[in-house]
Length: 271
Image 1 (cartoon, one colour):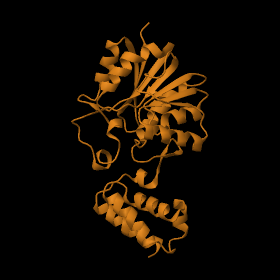
Image 2 (cartoon, helix red, strand yellow):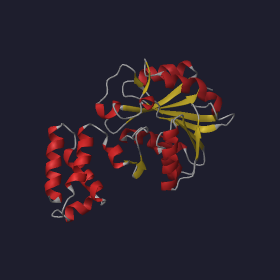
Image 3 (cartoon, helix red, strand yellow):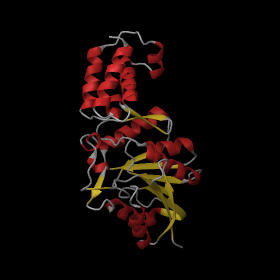
Image 4 (cartoon, one colour):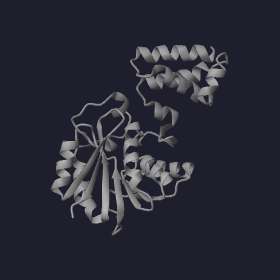
């Protein structure tokens, strides 16, 4: 079977399964199978394709295993971040948090809570002159974050900690977080709930539990004039704003993602 024929067949199968981008996924799996970049597929459509190896990957995807886990990476802010089962896959929506944070990063101390793959912390370290610390409770996530830091040449501190638990009396100018914000009762696609780490997705009955901790604990670790930026679910702006206000924070701005949904909130400490 040729590369062209395999891609056509895989595209049809993914389309029949209801996948959103069947041709793109077929291209990416073909390139991964052959160990080439996608542009090679265009210039070598008649090349022989290893059907058995390709079929193994197609079957994994048809069982709704996330494409990023099959490939072993996901692109975020123009860079490839390694991912594997047990680590939350970076989302494009989270790039909104990067854009919101960068103006406040230069020559500042930054803390990323719940770093996962390290995509937020590493991107901020590479895109600014900030001194970045990243924390997470998952050993798997911390291992992947460290691998990504080495692969991408980022210099930052990575610490195993449940929020601020192991940070002692350290102080920061900016605290950022994409915390678990899904309520336990919420239904998710099988690609997500059957494969990605639930601890990085679900926070409890309301979906607000981690925000409550960030709002109540961050003040003790923030320098005067410091800020907190958090990613939110698109329906949560009102509830998150209220719980931060109860803890003495000022809601400065809600920033929308590229789809026009509320995605990032910025808070400062009431003077």
